[in-house]
Structure formats: C-alpha cells, structure tokens
Length: 214
Image 1 (spheres, rainbow, N blue to C red):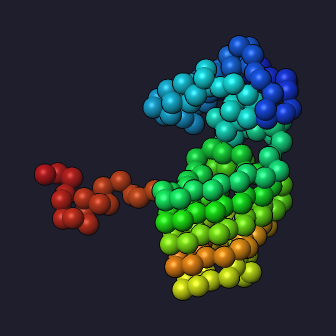
Image 2: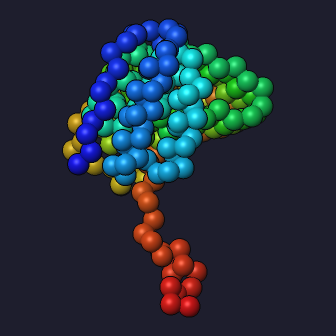
C-alpha cells in the first residue's frame, strides 16, 4: 500500500493565491494516486501540468476532487462559489470530470448545448440551483445514483424533460444531492441520464463480427 501524502492545510478561499509548497503537495497527491492506479499516466501528466500552472486554491481543487481519502479533502477546504454565470452566443458549455459545483448556475445560451456531468464532481451543498435560458440547444445532466433532478418548473417551447436509462438506477440509493432546474428552454430538451458503464472488453468486436482470434 502506498502512503498518503502529507496534506496541505492552507487557505480556504478559492480566489486566494497558492504557493510553490501548495502546488508541490497537490502534485504529490496526484503522483501517489497514479501509483495506486487511480489515475492513468496520461491523466497524471495533464493534471500535473494544470497543477504547476495553478494560481489559486480554486484552480487546484478540481484536480483532486474525484480522489479518495486525503486527496478529496482539498476540495472540501475550498468552499463552493455562490454563483457561476455563463452567457454565450453559439458553442457548447461542458462541465465534466473533476469540478467543484457552485451553489447556483445561471446559464444563458443561444445555439448550443450544455453538459453538466456530476459523476466526479465535488458538491459542497445538498442542493444545486440551475437557472437556464437556452434557445436552440439541449441541457444534459449526468447524475449518479442518489441524485434527484427536478425540472418541473422549466417553461418549454417545443421540448420536454427526458429521463433516460431509468431502469439502470438503484431505487434504494439514499438521496445524496438535489438539482433544481428552472427557467426557459426553446427548441430543446432537458435530458437526465446516469453515467455510462464501461463496455465489456471485446464487445464491440463481437458486435461487428470480428473475433479476437483473427
């Protein structure tokens, strides 16, 4: 078993500047996690690059938000932002991988799609409020077992709420987090689905009629 790295105890504000020691300690967390098999070498390289380029605690927190034990404590030290506001004309908005969920997301988008993937996200509050004004695009929410999405108050013009793969959910999972979606959507849907499960090795080849012995 690998030894957990000595944890960093500095700073609680996401906008506070970090020191060289802070970056080194987070880098050590990442190296240990890669040694334990929790990160691939490619992920380690990407996260180390972001780590040494980090300026604030808010930059560092997402790098370890999905790592267990003391590594996850970094995200817990950094409080969630009160509000994140996004305004965009065209293009897509994607929150996935390791990210710290704010208490409230306000999204105004024209001609694009929004992805909010909570699979590896760090949530500090029991409820996330998402207010949308989306025209000509979809809002997709990927939520693990124990997450509840309430989009009953969204005003649709030519769309609806779609729950996919409901049969794959654990009906006995305890409530972990609630996502309340409000606002307006024109020409699109709010799509809620669970994280995708990894495909069985070789399944695609078999589906295509290509045996592994060829």
